Image 1 (spheres, rainbow, N blue to C red):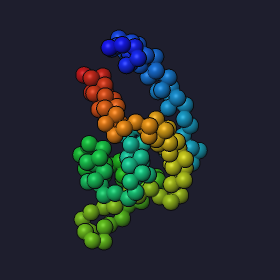
Image 2 (cartoon, rainbow, N blue to C red):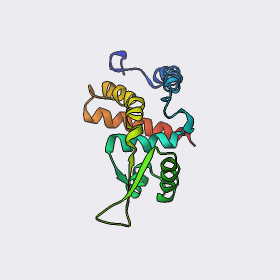
Image 3 (cartoon, rainbow, N blue to C red):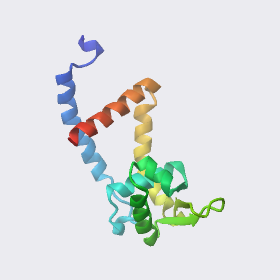
Length: 150
């Protein structure tokens, strides 16, 4: 492949080996909002909060499916965050066995300001791509994550 079509595999690897630490470093430097700093939020909490922020209120089973974890795991996280006042739980009026989870109004603005910046950056990076290019990018990141975990 010629340079005009993109780097060869080794060049791409070198570029990514330099880029990834910078990317992770930038993400780590995003300060946790003062309102949330005392809660010791873990990465698993951020994924859960992101889904609730961008999707709105969801049931525990829906969250578990999106997070690819067991419903019991989500129930534990939701219980922890609701005891801290970050999340609200309520029964679904249509199905009382179903628990609906949402971000507490008190923390919604702080969470949106914090996690929304990442969403804006992803939008800026992904909007110019075609749907097929976005899929390729996402599939590539998922394959890297899988290979890195082996």
